Length: 152
Image 1 (cartoon, rainbow, N blue to C red):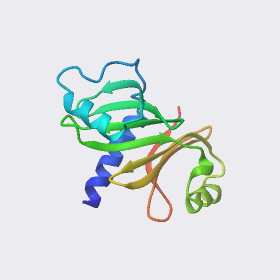
Image 2 (tube, one colour):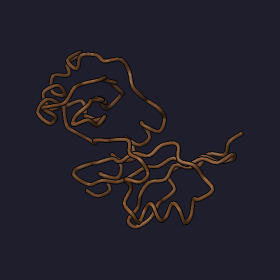
Image 3 (cartoon, rainbow, N blue to C red):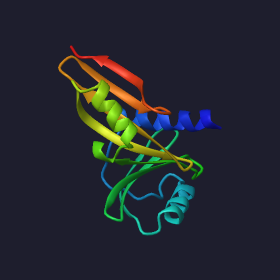
């Protein structure tokens, strides 16, 4: 089960990292997606829907709730796969923040988000310097390399 959670988290992270981003607000109920509509309104009763984006095996709903912008990812049958939110690096757990300062001080942060899957939170951060772009995923006690790109 832990492996499945990690696979879902990594899939969502890839989606976000590749920049499948916001689209203009569109109705949720289209192309037979009543299950997603029902689940979303049950899970997030006080949410204000901002946009939807349908991928091959998921639908991303971006919404505002309690002053925060969040994204929920649903399977085609209406199952909530993950919830994400952008965060400031200062909102990271202390152990991860200290690891960044210790091991990645020559990089600047270009993206940082929390992902919650089945009640378990993990974090992704994108760091850059003049030559390299790194995407890290939070492991048990420190960051693990998720993706590394050499800039041209």
